[in-house]
Image 1 (cartoon, rainbow, N blue to C red):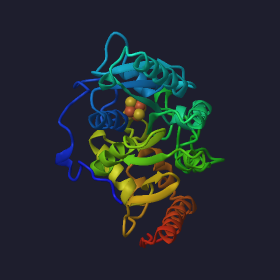
Image 2 (cartoon, rainbow, N blue to C red):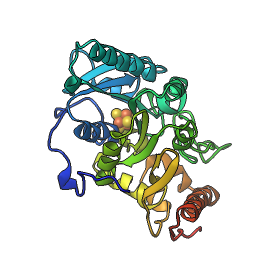
Image 3 (cartoon, rainbow, N blue to C red):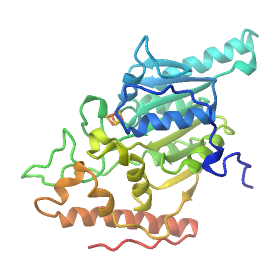
Length: 322
Ligand code: SF4
Protein backbone atom coordinates (compact mmCIF):
# COMPACT_ATOMS: atom_id res chain seq x y z
CA UNK A 1 0.00 0.00 0.00
CA UNK A 2 1.41 3.40 -0.94
CA UNK A 3 2.29 5.65 1.99
CA UNK A 4 0.42 8.96 2.13
CA UNK A 5 2.65 11.89 1.24
CA UNK A 6 2.44 15.58 1.99
CA UNK A 7 4.32 16.32 -1.25
CA UNK A 8 2.23 16.27 -4.43
CA UNK A 9 3.56 19.33 -6.27
CA UNK A 10 6.53 21.65 -5.84
CA UNK A 11 4.21 24.09 -4.12
CA UNK A 12 4.17 21.63 -1.21
CA UNK A 13 7.87 22.19 -0.59
CA UNK A 14 8.19 23.75 2.88
CA UNK A 15 8.98 27.47 2.72
CA UNK A 16 11.16 27.23 5.85
CA UNK A 17 14.81 27.96 5.11
CA UNK A 18 17.62 26.51 7.19
CA UNK A 19 20.35 27.76 4.88
CA UNK A 20 20.91 31.50 4.84
CA UNK A 21 21.52 33.21 1.49
CA UNK A 22 25.18 33.48 0.55
CA UNK A 23 27.76 30.77 1.13
CA UNK A 24 31.18 29.82 -0.13
CA UNK A 25 30.14 27.02 -2.50
CA UNK A 26 30.51 27.65 -6.24
CA UNK A 27 27.60 29.29 -8.05
CA UNK A 28 25.26 26.64 -9.41
CA UNK A 29 26.55 23.89 -7.08
CA UNK A 30 24.10 20.99 -6.99
CA UNK A 31 25.49 19.78 -3.66
CA UNK A 32 24.47 22.77 -1.59
CA UNK A 33 21.06 22.80 -3.25
CA UNK A 34 20.58 19.19 -2.17
CA UNK A 35 21.42 20.10 1.43
CA UNK A 36 18.92 22.95 1.29
CA UNK A 37 16.05 20.78 0.00
CA UNK A 38 16.89 17.86 2.30
CA UNK A 39 16.82 20.17 5.33
CA UNK A 40 13.41 21.54 4.37
CA UNK A 41 11.91 18.07 4.67
CA UNK A 42 13.72 17.14 7.89
CA UNK A 43 12.90 20.39 9.68
CA UNK A 44 15.01 22.27 12.23
CA UNK A 45 16.22 19.47 14.53
CA UNK A 46 19.15 18.20 12.51
CA UNK A 47 22.80 17.48 13.25
CA UNK A 48 24.95 17.24 10.14
CA UNK A 49 28.09 15.14 10.31
CA UNK A 50 30.39 16.13 7.49
CA UNK A 51 33.37 14.34 6.02
CA UNK A 52 36.03 16.49 4.39
CA UNK A 53 34.97 17.68 0.96
CA UNK A 54 33.54 20.67 -0.89
CA UNK A 55 30.81 21.14 1.71
CA UNK A 56 33.41 21.59 4.44
CA UNK A 57 34.26 24.96 2.91
CA UNK A 58 30.67 26.13 3.30
CA UNK A 59 30.75 25.84 7.08
CA UNK A 60 34.04 27.29 8.32
CA UNK A 61 34.17 28.31 11.97
CA UNK A 62 33.03 30.83 13.08
CA UNK A 63 30.87 31.32 9.98
CA UNK A 64 28.05 29.01 8.88
CA UNK A 65 25.15 29.45 6.48
CA UNK A 66 23.22 26.76 8.37
CA UNK A 67 20.75 27.28 11.18
CA UNK A 68 21.42 23.76 12.48
CA UNK A 69 24.31 21.82 14.03
CA UNK A 70 27.36 20.82 12.04
CA UNK A 71 30.25 18.55 13.01
CA UNK A 72 33.38 17.92 10.98
CA UNK A 73 35.07 14.57 10.86
CA UNK A 74 38.05 13.25 8.97
CA UNK A 75 37.44 12.05 5.42
CA UNK A 76 37.12 8.43 6.47
CA UNK A 77 34.97 8.61 9.55
CA UNK A 78 31.70 10.55 9.18
CA UNK A 79 29.44 7.52 9.86
CA UNK A 80 31.48 6.77 13.01
CA UNK A 81 30.88 10.38 14.05
CA UNK A 82 27.18 9.91 13.40
CA UNK A 83 27.20 6.87 15.67
CA UNK A 84 28.62 9.00 18.49
CA UNK A 85 25.98 11.70 18.04
CA UNK A 86 23.14 9.17 17.83
CA UNK A 87 24.37 7.37 20.97
CA UNK A 88 24.74 10.62 22.92
CA UNK A 89 21.20 11.68 22.02
CA UNK A 90 19.80 8.28 22.99
CA UNK A 91 21.62 8.28 26.33
CA UNK A 92 20.44 11.81 27.15
CA UNK A 93 16.84 10.88 26.35
CA UNK A 94 17.09 7.65 28.36
CA UNK A 95 18.33 9.66 31.37
CA UNK A 96 15.50 12.16 30.98
CA UNK A 97 17.95 14.97 30.21
CA UNK A 98 16.64 15.58 26.68
CA UNK A 99 12.92 15.63 25.86
CA UNK A 100 11.99 13.40 22.92
CA UNK A 101 10.60 16.50 21.19
CA UNK A 102 14.17 17.84 20.99
CA UNK A 103 15.62 14.68 19.48
CA UNK A 104 17.78 15.28 16.41
CA UNK A 105 17.90 13.65 13.00
CA UNK A 106 21.50 12.64 12.39
CA UNK A 107 22.63 13.18 8.79
CA UNK A 108 26.00 12.35 7.30
CA UNK A 109 26.76 14.59 4.34
CA UNK A 110 29.69 13.81 2.07
CA UNK A 111 30.80 14.04 -1.51
CA UNK A 112 31.45 10.99 -3.62
CA UNK A 113 35.12 10.87 -2.56
CA UNK A 114 34.13 9.94 0.99
CA UNK A 115 30.99 7.96 0.06
CA UNK A 116 32.48 5.79 -2.69
CA UNK A 117 36.12 5.64 -1.65
CA UNK A 118 37.78 6.95 1.50
CA UNK A 119 34.85 6.70 3.92
CA UNK A 120 33.23 3.54 2.70
CA UNK A 121 34.58 1.23 5.40
CA UNK A 122 33.07 3.47 8.08
CA UNK A 123 29.73 3.46 6.24
CA UNK A 124 29.83 -0.34 5.92
CA UNK A 125 30.25 -0.61 9.71
CA UNK A 126 27.33 1.75 10.34
CA UNK A 127 25.08 -0.23 7.97
CA UNK A 128 26.10 -3.44 9.71
CA UNK A 129 25.24 -1.95 13.12
CA UNK A 130 21.88 -0.75 11.75
CA UNK A 131 22.66 2.78 12.87
CA UNK A 132 19.55 4.95 12.62
CA UNK A 133 20.85 7.77 10.43
CA UNK A 134 20.58 9.45 7.04
CA UNK A 135 23.49 9.51 4.61
CA UNK A 136 23.36 12.18 1.91
CA UNK A 137 26.03 11.91 -0.78
CA UNK A 138 26.22 14.87 -3.15
CA UNK A 139 27.75 13.04 -6.07
CA UNK A 140 29.65 15.36 -8.39
CA UNK A 141 31.60 12.41 -9.78
CA UNK A 142 35.11 13.47 -8.70
CA UNK A 143 37.14 15.03 -5.87
CA UNK A 144 35.86 18.58 -6.48
CA UNK A 145 37.41 20.16 -3.41
CA UNK A 146 41.00 19.33 -4.35
CA UNK A 147 40.88 20.05 -8.07
CA UNK A 148 38.62 17.40 -9.66
CA UNK A 149 40.65 14.22 -9.40
CA UNK A 150 38.98 10.94 -10.38
CA UNK A 151 36.96 9.03 -7.76
CA UNK A 152 35.24 5.64 -8.06
CA UNK A 153 32.18 7.63 -9.08
CA UNK A 154 33.79 9.27 -12.11
CA UNK A 155 32.00 8.07 -15.26
CA UNK A 156 33.56 6.35 -18.24
CA UNK A 157 34.88 8.83 -20.78
CA UNK A 158 35.18 11.75 -18.37
CA UNK A 159 38.29 13.90 -18.19
CA UNK A 160 39.52 14.65 -14.69
CA UNK A 161 42.75 16.00 -13.21
CA UNK A 162 44.03 12.42 -12.92
CA UNK A 163 42.43 11.05 -16.10
CA UNK A 164 43.28 13.66 -18.72
CA UNK A 165 42.80 12.64 -22.35
CA UNK A 166 46.21 11.90 -23.83
CA UNK A 167 47.53 10.58 -27.14
CA UNK A 168 47.88 7.15 -25.57
CA UNK A 169 44.45 7.32 -23.92
CA UNK A 170 42.25 9.79 -25.80
CA UNK A 171 38.98 9.03 -23.95
CA UNK A 172 39.95 10.02 -20.39
CA UNK A 173 38.60 7.76 -17.65
CA UNK A 174 38.37 4.14 -18.76
CA UNK A 175 36.75 2.86 -15.52
CA UNK A 176 33.00 2.40 -15.12
CA UNK A 177 31.27 4.40 -12.37
CA UNK A 178 30.87 2.29 -9.23
CA UNK A 179 27.26 1.38 -8.41
CA UNK A 180 26.98 2.66 -4.83
CA UNK A 181 23.21 2.18 -4.80
CA UNK A 182 23.67 -1.56 -5.32
CA UNK A 183 26.51 -1.75 -2.81
CA UNK A 184 24.31 -0.33 -0.04
CA UNK A 185 21.42 -2.54 -1.13
CA UNK A 186 23.66 -5.62 -1.04
CA UNK A 187 24.47 -4.74 2.57
CA UNK A 188 20.75 -4.82 3.39
CA UNK A 189 20.35 -1.12 4.07
CA UNK A 190 16.58 -0.73 4.52
CA UNK A 191 16.32 2.39 2.35
CA UNK A 192 18.49 3.50 -0.57
CA UNK A 193 17.49 6.18 -3.08
CA UNK A 194 18.87 8.30 -5.87
CA UNK A 195 17.89 11.96 -6.13
CA UNK A 196 18.09 14.77 -8.65
CA UNK A 197 17.57 18.41 -7.74
CA UNK A 198 15.72 18.74 -11.06
CA UNK A 199 12.96 16.38 -9.86
CA UNK A 200 11.88 18.15 -6.71
CA UNK A 201 8.72 16.24 -5.85
CA UNK A 202 10.48 12.90 -6.25
CA UNK A 203 13.27 14.24 -4.00
CA UNK A 204 10.88 15.47 -1.29
CA UNK A 205 8.90 12.22 -1.22
CA UNK A 206 12.02 10.10 -0.84
CA UNK A 207 13.35 12.08 2.12
CA UNK A 208 9.89 11.93 3.66
CA UNK A 209 9.72 8.16 3.14
CA UNK A 210 13.14 7.65 4.72
CA UNK A 211 11.77 9.28 7.87
CA UNK A 212 9.32 6.40 8.28
CA UNK A 213 12.12 3.82 8.21
CA UNK A 214 14.43 3.03 11.12
CA UNK A 215 18.04 2.25 10.32
CA UNK A 216 20.56 3.40 7.72
CA UNK A 217 19.05 5.48 4.92
CA UNK A 218 21.23 6.32 1.93
CA UNK A 219 20.57 9.09 -0.62
CA UNK A 220 22.78 9.69 -3.64
CA UNK A 221 22.08 13.10 -5.13
CA UNK A 222 23.26 13.78 -8.66
CA UNK A 223 25.02 17.06 -7.93
CA UNK A 224 25.83 19.14 -10.98
CA UNK A 225 29.25 20.74 -10.60
CA UNK A 226 29.80 23.70 -12.94
CA UNK A 227 33.42 24.11 -11.85
CA UNK A 228 34.50 20.51 -12.40
CA UNK A 229 32.22 19.57 -15.27
CA UNK A 230 32.70 22.80 -17.23
CA UNK A 231 29.35 24.43 -17.94
CA UNK A 232 27.57 27.68 -17.14
CA UNK A 233 26.26 27.64 -13.52
CA UNK A 234 22.84 28.83 -14.71
CA UNK A 235 22.39 25.47 -16.47
CA UNK A 236 22.81 23.22 -13.41
CA UNK A 237 19.19 22.16 -13.12
CA UNK A 238 18.84 21.76 -16.89
CA UNK A 239 21.87 19.47 -16.95
CA UNK A 240 20.59 17.39 -14.03
CA UNK A 241 17.27 17.06 -15.86
CA UNK A 242 19.06 15.94 -19.03
CA UNK A 243 20.89 13.25 -17.05
CA UNK A 244 17.48 11.84 -16.06
CA UNK A 245 15.97 12.23 -19.54
CA UNK A 246 18.90 10.50 -21.24
CA UNK A 247 18.69 7.71 -18.66
CA UNK A 248 22.23 8.32 -17.43
CA UNK A 249 20.96 9.04 -13.89
CA UNK A 250 18.10 6.68 -13.00
CA UNK A 251 15.79 7.85 -10.24
CA UNK A 252 14.92 4.87 -8.05
CA UNK A 253 14.60 3.60 -4.53
CA UNK A 254 15.09 0.34 -2.70
CA UNK A 255 12.89 -0.50 0.28
CA UNK A 256 14.08 -3.61 2.13
CA UNK A 257 15.92 -4.64 -1.03
CA UNK A 258 13.01 -4.21 -3.46
CA UNK A 259 13.93 -1.76 -6.21
CA UNK A 260 11.45 0.54 -7.91
CA UNK A 261 12.22 3.20 -10.50
CA UNK A 262 10.36 6.32 -9.44
CA UNK A 263 10.77 8.22 -12.71
CA UNK A 264 10.74 6.25 -15.95
CA UNK A 265 11.74 8.11 -19.13
CA UNK A 266 9.50 6.45 -21.72
CA UNK A 267 11.85 7.40 -24.54
CA UNK A 268 15.53 8.03 -23.84
CA UNK A 269 17.17 11.15 -25.24
CA UNK A 270 20.56 10.40 -26.86
CA UNK A 271 23.43 10.62 -24.36
CA UNK A 272 25.18 13.01 -26.76
CA UNK A 273 22.70 15.70 -25.72
CA UNK A 274 24.06 15.46 -22.19
CA UNK A 275 27.74 14.87 -22.99
CA UNK A 276 28.17 17.76 -25.44
CA UNK A 277 27.13 20.32 -22.83
CA UNK A 278 30.16 19.68 -20.59
CA UNK A 279 33.86 20.42 -20.95
CA UNK A 280 34.79 17.18 -19.20
CA UNK A 281 33.49 15.24 -22.23
CA UNK A 282 34.64 17.71 -24.90
CA UNK A 283 37.53 15.44 -25.98
CA UNK A 284 34.96 12.83 -27.07
CA UNK A 285 33.83 15.23 -29.81
CA UNK A 286 36.82 17.43 -30.72
CA UNK A 287 39.09 17.36 -32.65
CA UNK A 288 37.86 13.87 -33.61
CA UNK A 289 34.59 12.28 -32.56
CA UNK A 290 35.34 9.22 -30.42
CA UNK A 291 32.46 7.22 -31.85
CA UNK A 292 33.34 3.99 -30.10
CA UNK A 293 33.46 5.57 -26.64
CA UNK A 294 30.14 7.41 -27.20
CA UNK A 295 28.60 4.17 -28.45
CA UNK A 296 29.83 2.36 -25.34
CA UNK A 297 28.11 4.94 -23.12
CA UNK A 298 24.86 4.80 -25.13
CA UNK A 299 24.78 1.00 -25.18
CA UNK A 300 25.39 0.82 -21.47
CA UNK A 301 22.46 3.20 -20.77
CA UNK A 302 20.13 1.38 -23.19
CA UNK A 303 21.05 -1.95 -21.65
CA UNK A 304 20.47 -0.68 -18.08
CA UNK A 305 16.91 0.39 -18.93
CA UNK A 306 16.14 -2.81 -20.86
CA UNK A 307 17.11 -4.90 -17.82
CA UNK A 308 15.30 -2.63 -15.34
CA UNK A 309 12.17 -2.58 -17.51
CA UNK A 310 12.14 -6.37 -17.82
CA UNK A 311 12.33 -6.69 -14.02
CA UNK A 312 9.71 -4.08 -13.17
CA UNK A 313 7.38 -4.44 -16.13
CA UNK A 314 7.85 -1.13 -17.92
CA UNK A 315 9.09 -0.33 -21.41
CA UNK A 316 11.62 2.35 -22.26
CA UNK A 317 12.35 3.24 -25.87
CA UNK A 318 16.13 3.06 -26.29
CA UNK A 319 18.05 5.88 -27.96
CA UNK A 320 19.65 5.14 -31.28
CA UNK A 321 23.24 3.86 -31.13
CA UNK A 322 25.22 5.69 -33.81
S1 SF4 B 1 33.61 22.13 -7.04
FE1 SF4 B 1 31.62 21.41 -7.73
S2 SF4 B 1 30.75 20.25 -5.99
FE2 SF4 B 1 32.46 21.52 -5.21
S3 SF4 B 1 31.47 23.43 -4.49
FE3 SF4 B 1 32.13 23.77 -6.61
S4 SF4 B 1 30.31 23.23 -7.88
FE4 SF4 B 1 29.99 22.36 -5.82
